[in-house]
Image 1 (cartoon, rainbow, N blue to C red):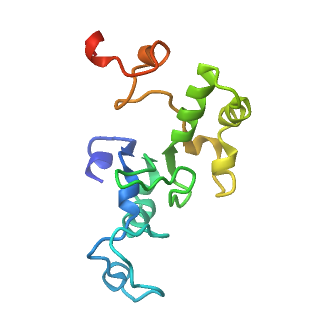
Image 2 (cartoon, rainbow, N blue to C red; image 1 turned 90 degrees about the horizontal axis):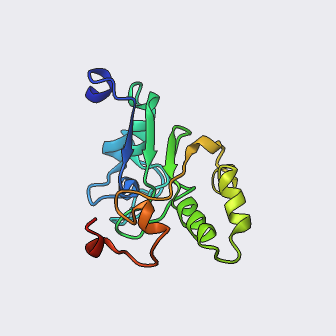
Length: 164
């Protein structure tokens, strides 16, 4: 809220955001929501359908009005691209777009249809959840993988020899 109100930041990207959808050992619906909810026995690490932190950010009068972007996976293997709890305000880094576009550019057979869907905003991922094409943040390279130059030049990372 401080960053939005005082520094005029207009949005946030949450790295490995799926971790915020998991139940913690402190999960207690009475403390979070003020009343028990059905099925309140949650194993630590279980993905929650309505995770309280995402719910609170989404419905906050200040934070709910800025760009909220989830990297919809985490280090524990939870992959929620197209299924991240969104309250119709969250966008997602579309890792499937990245993977399909890379395969198509390489010339791998069988990716033309997937590539066409990607160019149309990945409706196979977002349309059923009521979201629009702009909820898909499309990218091919990022801070933690190949540089774009390496992506189109090498089959394997080449960062040590080329000084990157």
